[in-house]
Image (cartoon, rainbow, N blue to C red):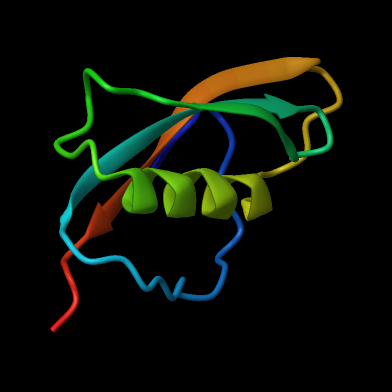
Length: 88
C-alpha cells in the first residue's frame, strides 16, 4: 500500500523475503521530485510487528519504490505499508 498524495507508485515486482513471522510493517518515506525515495524509517506505532527481519526487508524494498515525478514538489512525505503473510 502506498500513501503519498498526488504520487502514484509504479508497479514493481512482488518482493521475495526469507523471514519467519508475519505482520504489517509501515515505512515512512520522503520522495524527491524525481520520484525516488531519499529517506525512509520504520514507523513503530503504525506497524503490527517488531520482527527485525521483516523491518529490514521492508526498508530495503521501500528504497526500490519509484513514484510519479513532479517537478513542482521538491519532496513529498508519506508511507508504504508492507503486509507480510508469513512463510508457509
